[in-house]
Image 1 (spheres, rainbow, N blue to C red):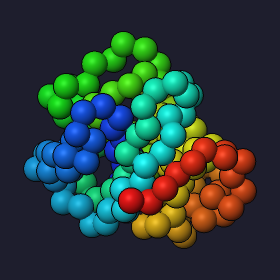
Image 2: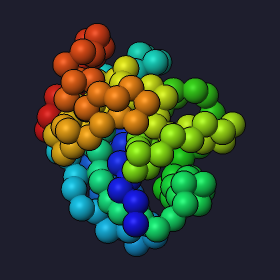
Image 3: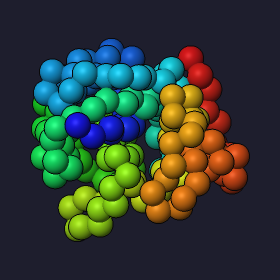
Image 4: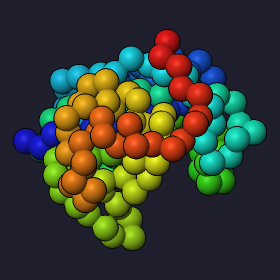
Length: 159
């Protein structure tokens, strides 16, 4: 089984309920959670005129290969009502694969580790809460070090 870290985000509808429902579907279809960060409210990143997000990082173990995991997560997003209209646009749910063990994958469909996780406070704050010592397999730095070196000044508040 492989250790996986996922970032969940929602900025439309009942954001807390949507995160909880997404976690329930992930546990049913991918694997049980072994850790979950607190929920954080964050300013919109990339497209700053959008409503604030709720974000949470979860950790689990799975037997699914990365491509199958991605397909499963995309199906969950679709089932939850996610519509892909514009990059960084508002969404009811977003699930990103941050890490899949220490694997490095770079295909047109899938990039692991997530290519921008080290640039985003809304990712690193909750990730550091549950896995501060996890080593980024490309940057060879732990999550806490990445957070401490971060230049992103977005407001991220733990709920």
